[in-house]
Length: 311
Image (cartoon, rainbow, N blue to C red; front, side, top):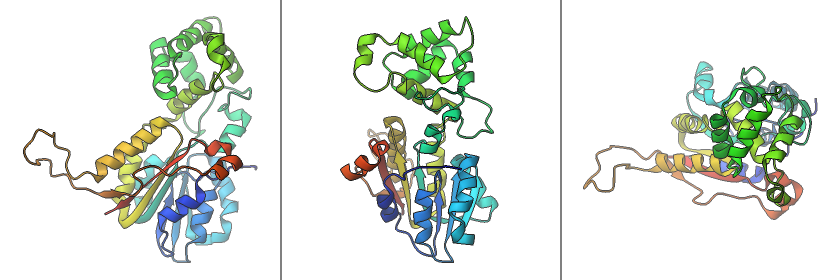
């Protein structure tokens, strides 16, 4: 099975994880196993790497790609929202580093039948985990106009969200919207021609929004960060790669909250919250890909890496 994916900010991630050869590390989003393989190379026989992925294709490919590392690797077919539960069920209560690449894997985008891409005609699916119930078809064909407008506006940051939602609802009155190309044509009709001349593909933002809704991508980030930090040993690092402002804002704000020693309103004369600072933020500004990396892998262009360390 082909599972091509160029790992983003690879050297920067490995450097910032500060890998100890006998440490325990977690790759929350294994994908094509690029990051996982580099982490494993830095581990001794005593070290362990736990790899999560909700895509069974990734798990199957990783069994071969990471086979040379033997017992150092543990593969878990699950969403990273379950990180604490899954690790504790295996007797792992503390780790030395956590990595999460929140981008959609190139394999998922390129596999036309998955319905992630507006560049290929396919059934409206977009599930990262094919065991999940909700698909893009369900959202496009059952959400109200207000609900569609909300997710397209909030998750896609699309200026024409209301018109797109209106056109979707009107179109499905005649027949269900079943394929990606059918949806693309509706979006093109909804966005005025002048607005489509410049900028990205007219369907890009709407497809992003629907994908985020299908997979609850934003809803699980905060809990993953909290659970990961709670399991980190002192000095352990958490590295998170984001690809759009919505994700990055969640990571930035959660790092800020976890690093704060007081969250009381500023008007109070003294602290009453008893909050403890749990992490030190390593990257006050996110690490960005180099021009060379962007040339090699254009999909890395919008990536940002934020790093924090457990106190």
